Length: 549
Image (cartoon, rainbow, N blue to C red):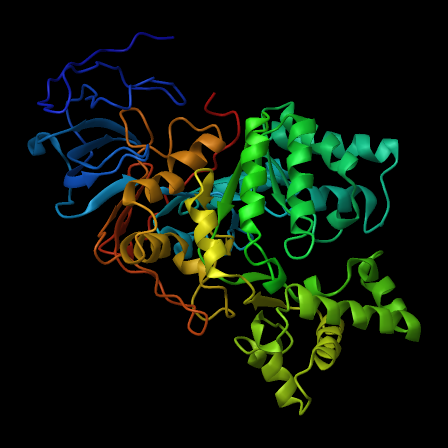
């Protein structure tokens, strides 16, 4: 390593008894700074100086009034009254909270190449988002990540590799176990994606074709990710009736594959399952005591969002759309499919009421966006019964499907899951822009909602705990020691917000609304949001697994 010049500067630090001297860090260098002390990086000047803010460093420690000095893309100083004369740019943060940028462990980034500024995430204070959830990801991953790099994303992005896309590539829509050669090929695809920068494997066992897999297949693929130091995130096979089995399966996959697990967007769907989070959280605690490294992520809303096809029994879709249409042409099979949809409307995502199913994106009839399945039934002069709803679901599927918001969660489960010590905050939101569809409000409001509703209004969480769940916890799950914290040597991903006013504004009736109170967002040392508005600078990067080790 070439020699580096050591430039010494002494800064008054009343909260620390000593100053640890460091040279400028190289990428990924673990500076091993003690979190209980405040350190100053020797520096001649600061490119950016955030002054007078209440610093919540992401570790869960109490807030402290400190200045934060940034040079390049790194934090180089933390201390009281850092010299302004050496700063090229000053961000005044008095009366505001200064925290690490938020890390979204479950983000739907599919429109990224069309929406490279990623404004719906950026304006929430998100500075790093993990794509490829629920079993869906680009394949091959490496060339796609190169494309993302070329468009210069607005925030940092990382990816998982998706089981459903791997299975579809090797087996199509076959509803069977893989042959030995097929399983080998799928394991090779997982390993290849890990080598290209994936952080682990995601599954969507509720969705096609992943729902056709058995646990042995998933364990084998999770082991391939584990061999490269990856994680496993699971959209459970069931989140309504069958939830406990779904959690048990994910925990067993983690145990057998010896891989860290995230129960992603954890919830209990449908009135029959409300309150069952007491059991699922106890299962998590028990598994952790037995040695399985399992955590949870969650969005702070009482509604889910997914395709309308989730109401159709999975067996009906085996083989793809052509086979689905053939089955519908057989009266006995069509009748069985309709009965399965009715059952899902009554006992699962339908919530027992057509008014609980709200369309978000319907390409073949935009007038339905924002309306409910009940609204559609009444428009067609049909009784809003589960049976009529099932007929309309089939009609929607035959026209190309669509996406919907399902109002089927209980607030007490949301609160209980949120306070669990292993729960992190994640949006499950899709990159969105005003006027495009009728998205779930989580796309615009997840992180500000936690800070405004569950910290300030309900006082369910302390501010320090909430920030910890949004920053260091997800960073550690990804194995990133240089993001998710405010400390010397860490990347300068920073959010300045007003704890007294921060809140979400997006609603289920008017979703296209940005939050308030997120005043400044800094990505890799660059001011990307100023006075609550994007500067237009895209300073994000592709973060690849293993690149900082």
